[in-house]
Picture 1 (cartoon, rainbow, N blue to C red):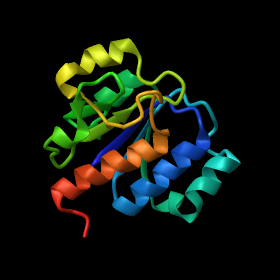
Picture 2 (picture 1 turned 135 degrees about the horizontal axis):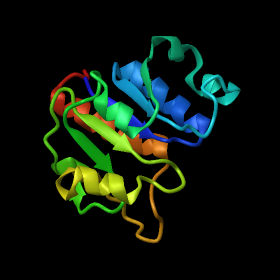
Picture 3 (picture 1 turned 120 degrees about the horizontal axis):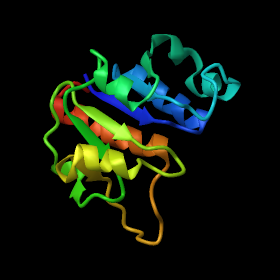
Picture 4 (picture 1 turned 180 degrees about the vertical axis):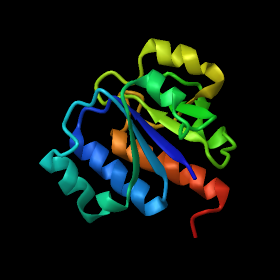
Length: 154
């Protein structure tokens, strides 16, 4: 199983889309609070549609609660535009976690420091004038690469 960790997401449609992707791939979704919306938000449910009931989702009051959770993955990869290592160069293992910062600020500096340079990865893009991909797109790309390596998607 791959874990997808959203650190303080702000946009319900992104979280709903990621939740749908997690349900389809049987990945576990971790939502690290505070969130920028209510989980009962109409847009979140619309983006997740009938998949939300099949989702393995866990809420954590903050980062410390996530790290202390018995359900938290042991090894984490932080997806960030500030990395030098590509997500293609990583050898993913069963139970790994993919961490994504929020849509406005990404992951805070202290989280970058906690995970260290060796655990930071990026999705390369050809247009250097643009900052990054949409959160739900990036989560899908990284999750499917990890699952491809694990051989769980056929």
